[in-house]
Amino acid sequence: MDPSADDRLDRAFTALADPVRRRIIARLSRGPATVNELAEPFEISKQAVSKHIQVLEQAELVTRTRDAQRRPVHLNAARLEALTAWIDKYRLIHEQQFRRLDALLTTIDGPSDGPRTQEA
Amino acid sequence: MTNALAVTAPEGVPFIEFQREFDAPVATVFRAHKEPELIKQWLGPRGYDMDIERYDFRTGGGYRYIHRDDKGAEYAFNGVFHVVRDEEFAIQTFEFEGFPDVVAIESLRFVDLGNGRTRLEGHSVYPSIESRDGMVASDMESGMREGYERLEDVVSAL
Image 1 (cartoon, rainbow over the protein chains, first blue to last red):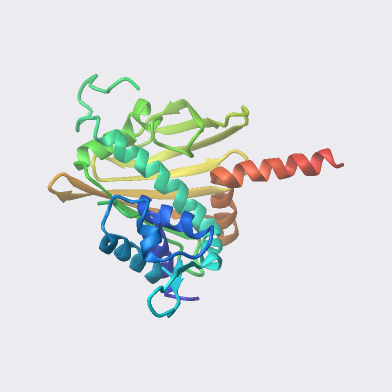
Image 2: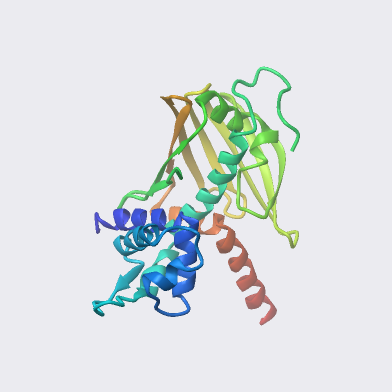
């Protein structure tokens, strides 16, 4: 009966839809890290990485402690584990499916008025 | 820019709804739903082969297809197309043959957003909340596989 549950889920999945943020999550699963440490493997600015971390924070997937300068980022493992209900599986599988559809749509034309289908 | 998938399952009713936008004109998105050779390329869980026995996406048509995993396990689905209006709207039934007689009714709206963009709006109705949750879970890649592996464990332990 929690009306905000869907919003929270949407935020979590939107956050996880991005490959950089997924890699940040993967890195944090091995332990907390600072923004600098997290920015290291990426060829994007520290500001951009900070933005990504903000998105993850808003999705409750990570937390930041008030540790003065360092402010290390921690993974919220419980939140990640909570994303395994049936509806999330439904969402994941549909997302995979629709990404394949995205890719397919770039290769075909509109109306089906002839044998223009590309061979798979 | 990723087109986010929105999924909602309202409390207390056996519905599932989704919305997803695509960077393609409605005619193209519709075509990808109509032609079996195209359907095959995107529908269903990743890593499964899809064998389409029949797929006639028009009012009064029907379909049956089989997903096969890499171990050769088969999952068959069938239904009828109650109504199909080109580039606009469709209603179909959906039955996983592993759970016979539990039939969902699914509507799909193709919304032309202009500028070569389209939104798909799906709405599925299951016979009960339990069947919705159970069916959807069992329709899932991991759900199906884990379920059957668990069943194998149970059976082999008998």
